[in-house]
Structures are given as structure tokens and as C-alpha cells.
Image 1 (cartoon, helix red, strand yellow):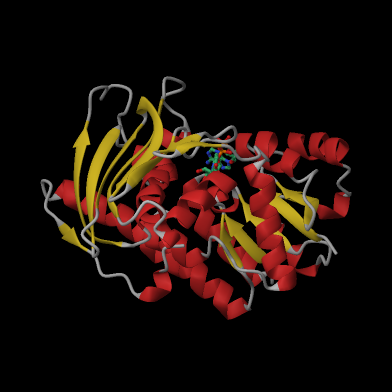
Image 2 (cartoon, rainbow, N blue to C red; image 1 turned 60 degrees about the vertical axis):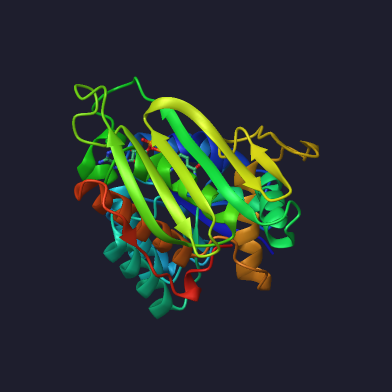
Length: 339
Ligand code: NAD
């Protein structure tokens, strides 16, 4: 059996990554679309052979509850719309995949998690890296202490934005924040899976060099994490800098991914040599992992609680900056796992 997925929001990620990946998935397929742009309906229907009854707009979306061809709703909208559409999908009885960052704030993450629990549907994050082999190898190094205890991690996730200054990612009302909300979650995730721990504190700084362009959102943020083991991490995220890397220094060596969180190809090396894994579509692997979880109960690699944990850290980083770089303590319950 293959699960039917409906993509909500047919922007660049759905168009160039998710829909093509869904042509190759084993446990799910592109069954429907939800779009606010009527002109896209015909184009997508023709390109992907989507029947009219599986095409929705933002207004009639809730009637998807009556459509047995749709098992999973994948929310790929601007961040400000994640909570609304994830909750509506859950209330329609559909399993939910929510893109990163999970929502605008922790309260919205709670609303999504509660709605999915109440409806008895599964909730997963669009964190594609947990399904791909380079990241899985990093997690194995940490779990098996291949290079001994991790002492220090450096995690950068950034790109240089020069396009339309009015794009939604640079509009706080739609994005919830700038680089930190967009690429920052990758750096946070790198720091966590490269140490195998949730942080116990964070201290953060913000830098602005192009205020005329970044009128509304953060440009560059650095943050330092402490972990209970004694490991420390430094992260950088930016919409002004090109960088994408994780590096971990351990008692008996080191490992590095560069790039660490882009689409394929990823690359990496360790103090013992190069890493070399198949470069398969991360989105394909991710959606198949989620579908396999729903169908067969295999482990959920990126649960909603992970998205909420990252939002707790995002809020702590913004709070540290607002308080002039004051260290924020964090105390995660085990249910926020670090997987
Ligand atoms: P995009 O700008 O290309 O597309 C956004 C879509 O939302 C468009 O179809 C647009 O029509 C629709 N939309 C509805 N209301 C809108 C509004 N008020 N303003 C702007 N657009 C509106 O964005 P994208 O790159 O496809 O990103 C969508 C989501 O996917 C974001 O949450 C983003 O963080 C996430 N994303 C994740 C990855 C990943 O690797 N996991 C990669 C890219 C994007």
C-alpha cells in the first residue's frame, strides 16, 4: 500500500523538491494538492495526473476530511500558516507533516501537537536530514563514541540573501524571524545530533551589517550551547554569509560534514578518512520514512516534539539577544529526545 500525500502550498520547495521526490517514493505518492493560486490547479493536475476531486483551495480545504484518497497532509506554506493548516489537517483526520520551522512560536507548536494527539493522527517534521546517510553516520559516531566523547561542535547554516527584500522570509509577520527561523534550525539540529544531547544553556549574539535590506528580520546570529556532558557548541546562522558545515572535535579525533544541511550532494570526512554514501533524494527518503512509520510502525525519525524543542531553543536565543547576551538555562524533559 502507498499512502496518498496532499501538498499544501505549491511554492519552490513543493515544486522543485517534494513533488519530484514523490514520483520515486515507495510508501507514498502525490495524491492531491491544496493551493491558494487557482492557475496552479490545472498545471499540477496535468503534470502529475491529479484528479479534480483531490484538488483543494484554502477555503474548501477542510472537506478533505471526506476524501479517503488523502492519508497525509504536508504543510509547505510560509511559517505563519503552519499552525493553522496543520491543525485543520489534524481535525480533518489526516496525518500531518509540517515543514520547518514548526511554527511561529512554542505556543503554536503546542497547538499542533495537541490537535494531532486529540485527532489520533501522526505528526512528523519536514526535517529531511534525519533520513539521509551522512547525518545518520554522524549520529552513529556519537552513539557508538567512534571518536570518543565529543568535546566541541561548530555548526554553521547560512546563505547570502540578495533577492526581493519583500519576500516572506524577510517579513516577520509571515516568517516569525530571519536567519534563525530559516537556516538556524539546521545549526541547532547539528549541534544537538553531533553531541547527542539537548543543551542546558544558550548564550546568543546578533549582528547586522545590511539593515536597509534586512529591515524586519535578523541577519546574522551566533550562539553558544553548553551540554550536561561538558561539551560545548558554537553555532552561526545568517542570511548574509555563505556557510554550511558541522565540525565535531572529539577526544580521539574529529568528524566533519561540509556541506552539512543542503540538499544532495553532501560531503564529509573524519580524522580517519573520507565519508562516501549514496546521494539519494533526501525528500524521498524522508517521506518514505514517515509513510513507513504510519503504515508499519517503524520509528518516527523527526517527531513534532523535536520541532517544538527547536522552537524552545529559538525562543531562548532571541531572549538571550534581547537581554544583551544573557545566558538562558534550559531544562528539557526526556520526551524531547535528541535523535
Ligand atoms: P515559497 O515562497 O517558494 O512558497 C510559498 C508558497 O506559499 C507559495 O506557493 C505561495 O503561493 C504560498 N503562500 C500562501 N500565502 C502566502 C503569503 N501570504 N505569502 C507568500 N506566499 C504565500 O516558499 P518555500 O521555499 O516553498 O517554503 C515553504 C515552507 O517550506 C517554509 O516553511 C520553508 O521554511 C520550508 N522549506 C523547507 C525546506 C527544507 O529543506 N526542509 C526547504 C525549503 C523550504
